[in-house]
Amino acid sequence: MFPNRVSVVAGLMGALALIVGLTACSRDPDSGAAKAVAKGPQTSLSKLDAVAVPAPGAPDYFRASQHPLHFKPAIDTASDDQCLGCHAEVLEPSVRATSPAGVEASSVKAWYQRTSTYQGEQDTFHRRHRETAMAKALMNLSCNSCHQGHDPRDEAPNSSATGQNTGFTLRKQVDPEAICLRCHGALNWPVMGLPEPWEKSGQAFQGNCLVCHAAIRTNRHQVSYLKADAIESAAKQDPQVCHGCHGGRAWYRISYPYSRHAWPGMPEPAPDWAKDRPAHSEARFLIRAAR
Image 1 (spheres, helix red, strand yellow):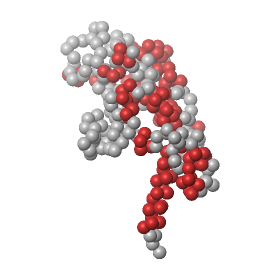
Image 2 (cartoon, helix red, strand yellow):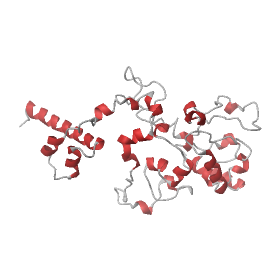
Image 3 (cartoon, helix red, strand yellow):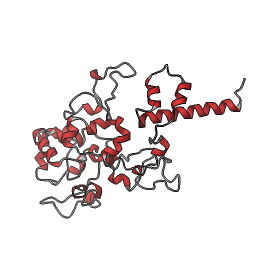
């Protein structure tokens, strides 16, 4: 009536073999496990167990998770080729043509499509930041621009002797407040002296941010993960390029406290809201550090 201890252990070992086999698929598409899985549902568990061994030289998931590239300081100098050697699937097109509820993707707009600066069909998160025409024209993001490593044993700070204590957001491998908000912060219209949010007050400025910013905060976008000249050129041709990031795709309606790079004619002293702002961007994003 109840399985004995031997059968339970055998079942657990079979499940573990399946996990290792699937891991081998992702690491080496020519491995025996990959070929077995590729045959589809007709492949029996017993046959998969027989080939669920990583190919010679191919690390299994548990060893790969401990690779030095996943930790400081190696991740700071990791190249995209090194990252994509194991994570190439993040750039593969994989958007559903139809949602689980039966809604066709072509018949609705995703939130990121609701600004004029996004062109094309729906696409995945990583591809929108690396592969789309806009990403290639205006962005210069690398894998480690966002991913700075994490301890695979921990998804919460201070849970072990090696757990991260600072710059850590619970259960997230990327800190959105430090990374995402840089390009997806809400427009801080009260600080700018606007009477209402840009969606309403922008009409008084012909919807053009450069009406004011042609002379104010002119030293901008000077970071390694953006193409400053291309952004400035695009903004002159289409003012919506500015709002596309600065408010148009706001993340939780939170503004980002940008550093105040000095510009010609910058008023002194700094206003109260800017007294604690740094004078330079984070060191790893300085353009001279990227060369």
